[in-house]
Amino acid sequence: MMQYQCAKAAGCDVIVTNNKRDFHEFCELPFLTSEEFLLQIDY
Image (cartoon, rainbow, N blue to C red):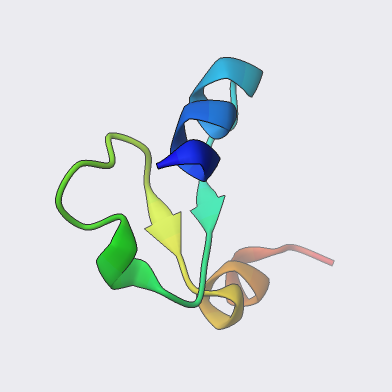
């Protein structure tokens, strides 16, 4: 998947997606929904 390859090449720590099933089978990076991601941000 193009988004995953770009994220790896850019050195991203996490992928934010509302379609987790697209990444479940092959993604080595953690992936979160937008809601899960926002809950982890320290303001």
